[in-house]
Amino acid sequence: MVDPCPETQALALEQAKTRGLSVITAPDPQVAQAMLDMTVPDVLLCDLFMPEMAGLSMMRDIRRRYPQTAMIMMAEEG
Image (cartoon, rainbow, N blue to C red; front, side):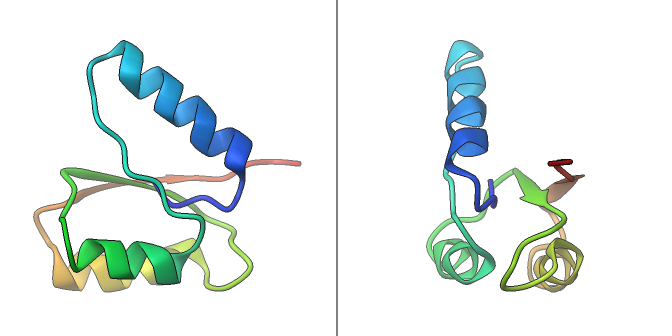
């Protein structure tokens, strides 16, 4: 999960644990890219609006590198 909001990350972790899933979180695209060099997730959940890089741009890059990874885009309205 790539999202700059700690509260959103915490919610995702809580929901995943209740379903027996494991979640790796990253606060920004740069950290996420580094993490992807170590492990490739089955699903990537990404915030559309991030300060450092648009989520859509990041997902396009990841799609090229890891076509087997499913992707879900989300947008928080604040």
